[in-house]
Length: 208
Image 1 (spheres, helix red, strand yellow):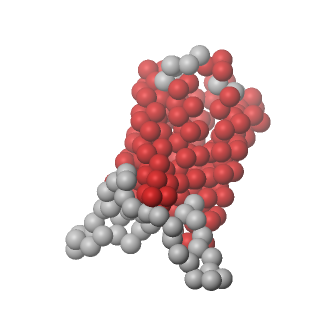
Image 2 (spheres, rainbow, N blue to C red):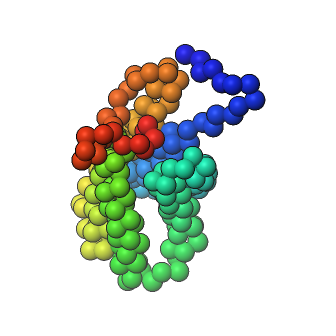
Image 3 (cartoon, helix red, strand yellow):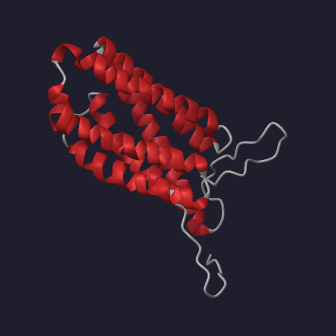
């Protein structure tokens, strides 16, 4: 279905599917290692994704969300793009500077801070769509499990965090897929389940 546009008009594309896809793929690959499904010796493969796709591409999606007037999307994508860039910096430049005895607590603190941010973004997501709210719900649990795992050196809890992280990635991929395919076909192919306000009206947030 082709969308007709007035001559000389410019209709910006929705940056949300890009941001969700960048987040999903990077989270999926890292979670495969956290869940101990793939040998951790290969974990450096995450770094390229963290910088380029989860980081820079998602950060750009966040900047473009400002243009659309979407405060939620701008905050989420910019923040998580910065998260993945900070992860890349942490692993490549900073981890070696942390004394081994303090590494667990330090990384745990880092993860707890992101858990707090994700938790209040989950509350805000309850006025978007069910697909997006599910991503933030699962991501909050993921951060909490990973924070507990690092803070207390609980490898089993870290594995749980990896498994929930995989579920988070799948949910984010679905939300991205739905936004792309619904836009391409011009109708709802993959439902995202718009959430409603207490009055029963649908939220005015973007369709992802």
